[in-house]
Amino acid sequence: MSQVIDPSTTLIPGFSAGNAFSAWKTERARALARHTAFGLPTHRDEEWKYTSVRGLAEVDWQFVSTANLTGENLAGPSLMADAIQLVFVNGRFAPELSSAASAIPGLTAISLATAVESHPDLVRQYLMQATLLEDQSFPVTAHLGRLGKPGADTFAALNTATFVDGAFIHVARNAKLDRPIHVRHLTAGDRPAAAPRLLVIVEEGADAQVLESYESVQDGPSFVTPVAEVFVGRNARLEHVRLQDENLLATHIGTTDVRAEADASYLHYQVVFGGHLTRHDLNGFLNGTNLHARMDGVIALSGDQLADNHTRLDHAFAHGDSFQVYKHVLAERSTAVFNGKIFVHQDAQKTDAKQTNQALLLSSEATMNTKPQLEIFADDVKCTHGATVGQLDDLPLFYLRTRGLPQVQARGLLVYAFAAEVLERISHPGLRDALEAKLLAKLNQV
Image (cartoon, rainbow, N blue to C red; front, side, top):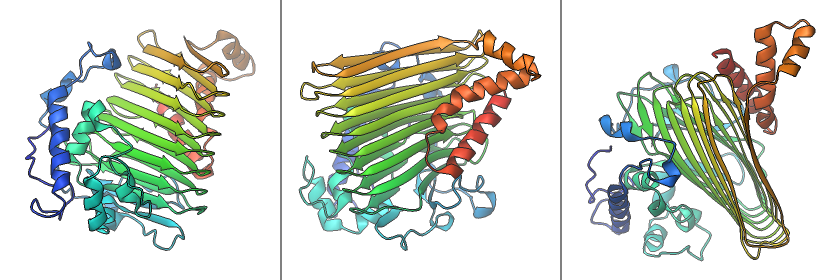
């Protein structure tokens, strides 16, 4: 499935095998061993029961180091005209396509390789420890590789074994950013494989908005295995939008691991329009009291597309609330999977957790597999979950027809209203409008 990786190679360019950073060599080799031992999941694995990745082994994927990509043939402008933009091509930072963030007070937005190289002694110290460093003044060393659990997933392990760069976003304590950050991942070339990495740290009392997007510059198959690690400090707020809009031959298997501290607010919006096979695991650990979390998604598929979304949210302390609304629009022969888990731990009294999955089938050949789960170990909570799968209601369609709307327009309006409910919660008006336009374009294809 992937190229043979020499364990003596290093994670970050510029770190030779014989220097003080040899611990990364060990971690990388260990992750490769995990991936090799786990191999590709099959239908016998409960977490992959409805999603086959067997075809990945039939393609000779290439970890392309460079691509002929310039500003002239970049895949369009950013969805947010006012955004700080970090662009990555096949998992490698493209500074010529990115915008500087040095003038934004309280914000560090640079390539991960640059961030790690900035503090080599502390990186070495970090790599030698199995737990978070107490010294939080150098956040790369404190969190990189510690929020996620690459040993628990074969594709996250593959990312750890192969990634060479990524995005590092650090928002300083009490900073309130008036500009969003767009981390933009592009794939280009012949059968490219990429392992993008994202590390976001929002310190205590800070407020930020991040768009993480995945796009194809060229036609043809690609294989992307991103991992994002997100830390939201006490009383901080992060709005995190994740857009998968690659071409219809792309395979995208990603993981996002989030840890939020007391009184924090984390808002995640998963938007899927592209890809032949898309899988995303979103894991949130609410590590404090009075936390607020949203994990919403809108997935619009057509043709033979397959999208598989798994969420896991752990309420570990009292007085937390979380809300999940995932909406699917499935046309033609498309297939979707949703597995949402909420765990309410014994000390998480007064938890309010709600989970909803709704699917609209526009074809008799479309398939929705849904499995909402609740595991509650506290006795003073309000928790609900539910799933609905159905077709358009004839009554509102008839009502619109009696008002003079043609059949196609009336049907499109109802489908758009169903799916756009999630997008309306996004606070940035430019991004919200752009995603709604993409949704309309997608619906016009079916």
